[in-house]
Length: 140
Image (cartoon, rainbow, N blue to C red):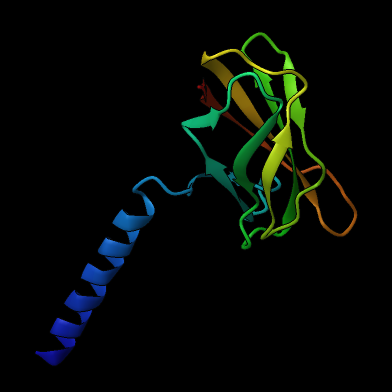
């Protein structure tokens, strides 16, 4: 009986943790296979929107490469239509961009955009699979 209670308690704690993590914090939305057929996955953080300040090029963000990854990310942010607003330097596992500088300031409004993930091996900078996350830039 004790074992069943322990298992139930562990399950409830795990459910609470997963619920809390999904309540507005960053989350890993999907996985991309590092190399087709390799069985190795890359954790790709997903975002539905990014909040930006209107009229400023300097923006506060939290764009990260999860620590469990064995690759670097090069991220870029483009508006619908292809205009690149920002491209970052290589981001190692466990690191994050917290401030970025856009190529131009945006007026208040909502902008459909894409966050591009280009992934590379740590050892020799060979390209791996990447991902594109469709999101909204909410500029206030």
